[in-house]
Image (cartoon, rainbow, N blue to C red; front, side, top):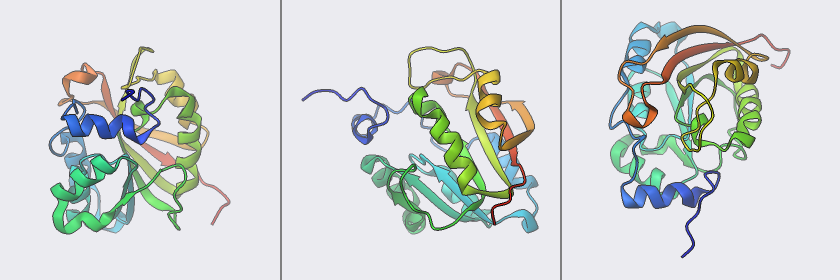
Length: 203
């Protein structure tokens, strides 16, 4: 059987989940997200989308914090694992392609962790466009970004300049700090960032 080397194909990820080769899997909720949820006012909570949710640990954290959670992953193996982890919250997960699925809504918040760096670089502009389309005006994009110079991936790092160019047209960065519990595969080069969706005319 020919090995899938294209990370835009679900089988690329399913084979890794099946083999237990998931060095990006945090096995829990990152500290920066826990801190963010602790300081988020209840009045500011609403709908959240988690693209490329993987094992789905963060779904339970957002749910417990009072968010209406939707998570998506196109790898059946990842979704199966997440549903096993989540149990009663498993209905929050959609097995589908983030770029093609009709969510039927826009979200107050989108959470990023290991999704951008898992994509082929050619798809990064599609990622930015999709985020802009799915986030309400004044909404937020928060999470962890893998910062660095280009190398073979995934994970594929992105420079600060390229990230600013990618997201800066529709989002404004309002927080940037070092991640203190980064996994070895990311070489201590992750940053927790919060971006605010610029005002748009779309309702």
